[in-house]
Length: 408
Ligand SMILES: Cc1cc2nc3c(=O)[nH]c(=O)nc-3n(C[C@H](O)[C@H](O)[C@H](O)COP(=O)(O)OP(=O)(O)OC[C@H]3O[C@@H](n4cnc5c(N)ncnc54)[C@H](O)[C@@H]3O)c2cc1C
Image (cartoon, rainbow, N blue to C red; front, side, top):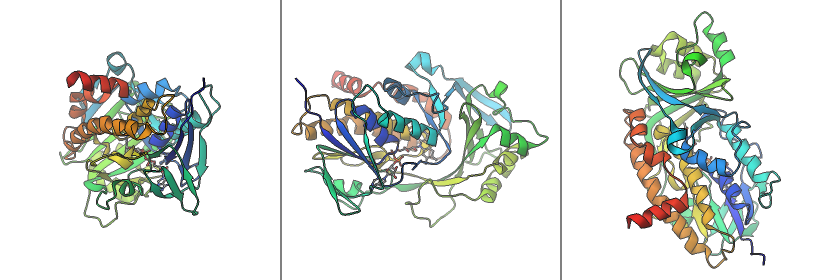
């Protein structure tokens, strides 16, 4: 006997939407509406995906080599050019997977391949680019598009990012919006070749030179103890480095809706890190694309679901990158759709979505709370290690539900 496949609409082809599409395609018919074009990519800078998500990605045939993924073996902190602390992560033996540094656009490209390539696992996901969704009937599962057309489904997954247009439709309120966290991040990705050229007579710093970096993520603190630091890790098969350069925000009138595609000013970035050393300023000077992002997060929402619609990813829980868990939470959300097992009917859908929302919301609340504790920028690495079991020990929605029922 064949089971009916549910029709599923996903709004947004970011990291959350594409992972959800791949998780669902074996058993259901999935259409993704993306307002941008096929090449909409969330910037060329880096992203670090942690063991909790790598385990999920490996279960859906994610090919890290295609994404130029670099396994990250540990974290170092630097002060005044000296290694202050060093922690070898040993994540693979402890949690079953390591952390991986990638270029965001390569990572998204690989997720797109998993959703759209011919695979043994079910039908291809149908991608509709230039498909901005403007309205939603949560109870009926009907979406309205900018061109005036509509589409309907058994399930609508809202993965339209931090500035979600559909969040307030689902919540039937205008009061939920992200807030600035008081931190600004300049983000650049620089090739080793360009860095060497710009360094000229200076050597690659200890945290970059491959024989000393040894695939570490480095947190380089300000020499004067002020809350500024640079996070550096290798990406693109070790041919490039991602540098996320964090400073306290100066008062700004820029609206929160400016995305991380906003261009940054090179001179301002270099000036903010002038005292980090000439090698660092020369490296920053080699950047050809600078993105700037005033970090924001979203306070806990009262619910993620209504009827046959559910919020996931940044639309449900944007958080700052201070514990590197934003995208990881989005990938975990996507994995939770495994609960839409073959045979789930249209009638069953609201109850299954509600369960997913409740289990995920509790976990994300804890991670958001821990992330907010380091908005002062103090103790970022220490908190990551303190919380390693919480962050990286996650083993999917079924395991989370079993643990919940054991604790009850
Ligand atoms: C500086 C910085 C560094 C970060 N580093 C890390 C890191 O190292 N590790 C980590 O885990 N997280 C990190 N994050 C967080 C991470 O980037 C986000 O959590 C993640 O991108 C969220 O994915 P998403 O799919 O929910 O949203 P997005 O990736 O923003 O995707 C949303 C998609 O929806 C589309 N869309 C929007 N509106 C509509 C509409 N109405 N109709 C159709 N389509 C629509 C958009 O075009 C977009 O493609 C970082 C964030 C920042 C700002």
